[in-house]
Length: 187
Length: 187
DNA sequence: GTCTATATCAAGATAGAC
DNA sequence: GTCTATCTTGATATAGAC
Image 1: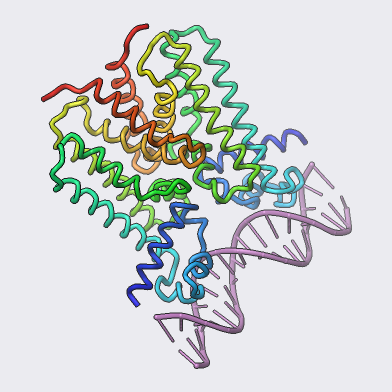
Image 2 (image 1 turned 30 degrees about the horizontal axis):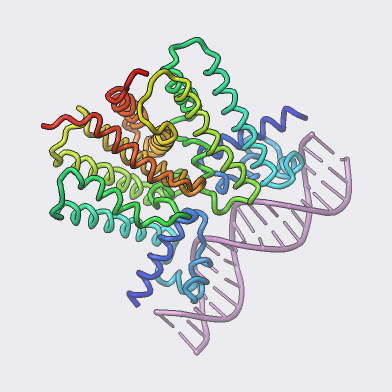
């Protein structure tokens, strides 16, 4: 059943956002879906297989967000913020970004998953660089650096937001916009 | 032996930076120290007790860094950067900030530790706010927001830095300084 | 204060029935 | 494709000897 397979991926992905790859078990998934552990093992023989499928699922979502935003007819300077919020919207208040979550578990992941997490981490920054380069605004000389700051701060903010609430994520986005606007030089 | 006790805390703290609270075991610590699991249990009956001791240890270091920087005779505008780098210096390239690490594990921590992690997360931002307020520079109207951005971006950068290398942490700090300098209004 | 030994439990995984 | 049953391993934790 292909449906069951993608259902498992979606639920496992949510578990990663909530508690991390190392901290969810096949039994957690089985109980939630209403089947047995063995049935999860049928679809994904090893947890590593499921982990890789989840990474592929995240990559698909990332690619999709980028392509969608790139082709949308909105102000070109707004695209970067649209991209960021389209990614952040998928994360509930008691969750964090699944890529951050797997970054924390990194040293305990199978090497195949380490490679995937590395690729995802890189790709995410690449997409932000592209959107910044396509924009008509020149904020700093170092577009790669600005991209790294944007991604780092959003990810960090989501982690603090879960613990402290206080609209911390919203606050950080507002600060970034303020600082960037104060530095914009039209090309 | 009080020495053994603090030795356990230091090694456990390093383990948290490397792999997280949930992912290190008493056996890991025992092997590293050269004693048995049971001996760790003697000093910290439950892992939760050790976890709380580690949180207290982190708080001590945080307080110490703040007080030291606050009383150092350096340019008052530099103190915030000194504070951040004094904290980041303690983290090796294959580690992340221990507070970030426990934030990721948050939903699986015993409630007593959740309270400690919450307190640490809050305190860290408070110290940054204080240093910004004492500074002679007014960057934005929203000092709390700027503090949240600084802490979030540094924590996020350390996580990406471990996976991607590329001096990502250094790059992010440089970007923050650039953006902030472009927005400074002398009081 | 540190040890051996052991209890208990949960996790990942596999074999084989239906 | 999903099940029951079972194996193995590793983790937290405890009892009691030295």
